[in-house]
Amino acid sequence: MNELLNNLEQLHTTELGIERIKRNLSLETDDVIEWCKNKISSEAAVITRNGKNWYVNVEKCVITVNAYSYTIITAHKEKKSALSPTETKQTAKRMQESGNVLCDDIRFLTERALWETENLMKCIPDELWIKRYDGIPMWKFLYHTLYSMDRWYINPYDETYQNPPFHMDTLADLNVIPKDECLSREQMERYFGQIRNKIQNYVSLLSDRELSEKPENCDMSRFRLILGQFRHWHRHMGVIYGFIIEDDGKWPYVLNMRGKYPDDPMPNYY
Figure 1 (cartoon, one colour):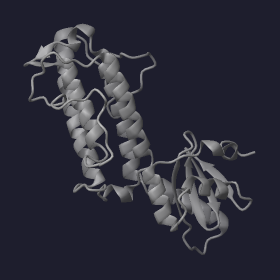
Figure 2 (cartoon, rainbow, N blue to C red; figure 1 turned 120 degrees about the horizontal axis):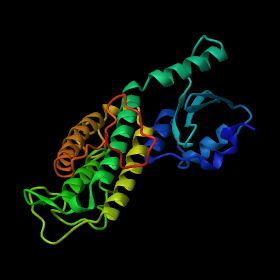
Figure 3 (cartoon, rainbow, N blue to C red; figure 1 turned 180 degrees about the horizontal axis):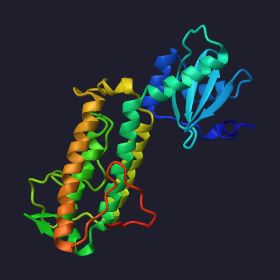
Figure 4 (cartoon, rainbow, N blue to C red; figure 1 turned 30 degrees about the vertical axis):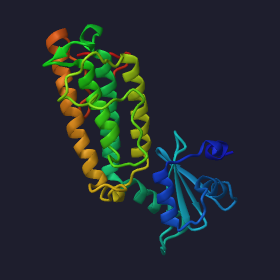
């Protein structure tokens, strides 16, 4: 049996994915995942795999599923064509691959930046975790970076957003020198893991068309939010890099555009 059919129970998507699929196919059902399962398992479905995705052509629509995570990325109506069925499927796959060039680049760079962030956290020696720079401890520089990622990468005006349980007013504000409060490395690593999963799920379903759209209640496009966060994210990572290099004498490893992911476990240095 086809591998996708063997793993139908693993199919899932995000709220953004549900909205996209319902809009693309004019669906009225509230259970989009179950609807996709039924279509994929029907005898009329033609299932093909190309690279990282499964493509399911069924009843004049195409469902796209990530072959590794079983995330339903999107579904759309087949475009009318004079091509043969085989040519139509090949064209649909080419459109799928070439239609999200910007998002593919965003996913590529986001994944590398997330790796660099985790590695940077692990490169901070215990003795520098609470050391103060101009009155601000190292952990607060890191928390400021992570909190901004959490709030601003997707939608800073999300009414359902909840602060992490340890958050307090001014905790992420670099203009406020903390007193005795301190976040532990364990708290920060757990928080980063939550942010990483949240961002990865978001970008895995993002399309180029949606980049120009504004999230709910937000006056900025998704593309501007992502670019702005990359600017802020890496600026503050650079500050932390400088502290580590100056005080520890070691240079945390960065991937750059083409660098190889190290085989050794973190922390990685040059």
